[in-house]
Length: 478
Image: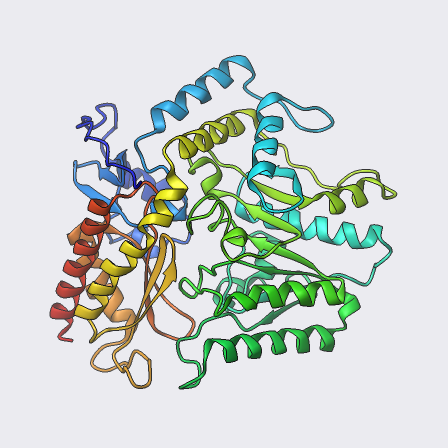
């Protein structure tokens, strides 16, 4: 059964927030991927409280969080006190300990729980602090695995175009997002990119099976061209976030990728920083799409982002091979890897998710979410070119030329529409979501609500988006 929305706690706004936080932040806080205008002329939102699927700014105004923070607040904002009790207890017992040749209960028990949830023989867990660190660790583990086996030439990685895997040196090298990586090139040598699974704009009349055949043929051609014995791993998100909720075209796609990896001795890494821990209606996206990776990287939902935590889940064979190698250990370490407080928060998060049947809630309500967003798409067919996605991860691609499937720059550019009309309309409606202009020049609107969202929440979110689209198109004259 889907979750029943908890009664509002009607909590009062925090009374201990100093005035002028926005100006303090503009002066001293360097924010993530934040344009200069937010430091200068634009209003900077300051959020001070959360409740269920909503957050409240310093003025008490409520916003529906249609992005679950950043695809990560699985439990919404209601369970912080319960998770906080676990955090408090751990701080009192053991606030910090490393996992360098020692262990402690939270890390060991969390690793055991993750192994129970993960597919196949993915029984070994290395902890990091976030998604980028997790992918960085996976790169090193893949390299060390092959070197230990004597395959010193296997240093190359294959990722997909437009994919995002992080901002650290190795993880950024995997990115297929040109604008994110080009300023910092040259990056890690040996990364190649293949087509992603976006079907919008594929040739007219092409079937999903034909798309799958094309993608797999291109992938194998790239492997052969590079030299199969030089490729260490292929990394893919089960559902690709950047580019807009890109699903596998058919079930045969990931089965085919797995078969190519097996054929050529290549490791398959599933980047589940977003899709892990329920976002698609299964504990992992690789389970959802029925394929077996050699490693899974995770972060975000493992602790509902209440505490920073990430990691790599690897097969027994990979870890045992590395441990039996000349170094006798995985040659990587992080001060905060397996932090006891973060692990305690994650254990409590998973306990609550199981108790509240959160993953089942996503599976049950995904068709309803698709239906309600489909109604919005149909009502605004003048600007919605495509609505796609799976589970609680959906994307609208906006166009003004439905035939060409592109945003034409007349009467206004995509940037002007987003900056001057759509973003203000979303703010006025009180809806938080991700708006970006993709690599092909079309605006994308992404919705990925907390996994505890109910039918009533979905109705509200769809209604707010409808209101924002209506206001934006009216003010833009579209």
